[in-house]
Image (cartoon, rainbow, N blue to C red):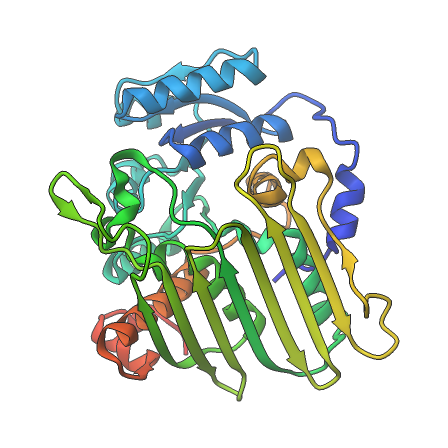
Length: 397
């Protein structure tokens, strides 16, 4: 792992007065022009190491919005492709970003894998574990690289937390890990796909794979068992679309046991007014708390903080670690900016800190096991669950 080689303060210092320089040497195709696709277009242009050459999306309104926004911050011509095949086969395209709804990721990969071009696939990698297994096997043979969109590992408070714990060993041996997210409900998406488990993969897969990725990386060992409670208490109870009633869960409590004795938990609440994330890690020497306060209100800034309760530590009473305003505002509080930086580093054969398909697989495995636990009321052995799903052959325990 490399994503803690810098502190968030060091990252902030080198982008404090960031101005894109030089000529981009990578032409991007954005497949999917919804909210996250448009964010990737903005961030790629801001970073300036790649150029958004073209887009494809079967939804004409999404394309219209993307083109209008793009014209507002770039003077480059944007190619709008009539179909996916002509887009991915265009020799002008150097790399492809797949930013479509969750349930389409696997199908689209089948249609573009022949290109052998570098790929970025938004999280979660798939909505079904059997599809994730196929993707992992493909990644092992693929002539280029496949990066997954686990951008939360690039958030400033988590960059700082991992640097403190893994690089500086500030806490000594880790004993417990606790993460939580409190936030408003799912936003509107095209055809409201994120309100249904069949299309999203379920809340813990769709939204929370980020957090399971971070917990897995922090534990640095394999998970043994999961127990979870989740449900639909407030959000979208009376919501339906095209005759289908929403079944997406809006809260969860997940308890995890890892090999080697590390215990972990995750709490989700999606009917809060504002956004608050927290990571609390305890070790032999004390506790680290990383947090982020944010809002979906236009014009508001997030505030990221870290506190290291270890005797004599300079951050014992806490310190702010928010990225500089232009970077923080670019997408996911600056995380997408550094995610793109990692993608271009990998494109240029430089060391990188991006998420692999294997890491993405473990994140949705934990999430899927948690959803199985919530559905059955049982403690789930993750290894047994993986065997039942037919995916143990691609996992190293």
